[in-house]
Length: 73
Image (cartoon, rainbow, N blue to C red):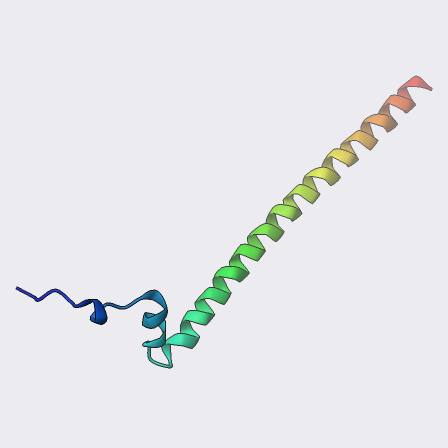
């Protein structure tokens, strides 16, 4: 059986990050940057979809107004 680690042997979150080799830290920063970029892009796509839907509704409303005016005169 394996002995249980002592309290001094346990890693905390901050300590574990400091103990990483130097090459791993930039990699974790790059992963975080890519995650943030993905979140930003997702929000941009959502905004573009809302903008497109509002333009479509506006175009439809204008078309209906033009047809209504043309049929009345």
